Amino acid sequence: MSEHKLFGGIAADSFSVGDIVKWSSWSMENQGWDDHYGIITEISSQFKSNRLVSISKVRPLNSTNAEIEFFTLSLKMVSKVDRTN
Image (cartoon, rainbow, N blue to C red; front, side, top):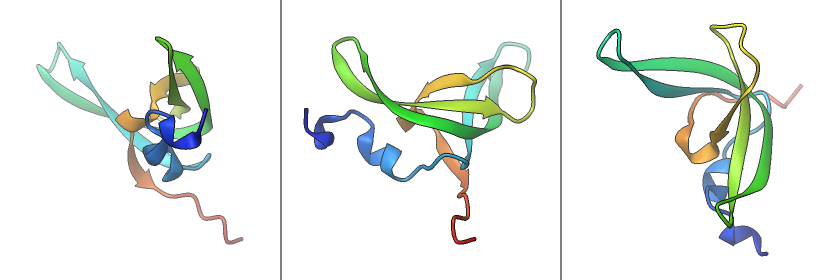
């Protein structure tokens, strides 16, 4: 399968392992959206519902939870990893 058919592939190209990202989730307690932050630990392509999609594993910064998988397109960049050193 060609790379341009990867759903979320364009967004995945802008992320690297080590980048700090954020995502939002609905809070019933606050009746609003809460932002969460984490570090990308892995970016891969997986088949989901018969479609090849970009999936990112993220380790949350504000909790001791294990890694969480996200559709890469749902993440927003906070800080890019510096690979010059």
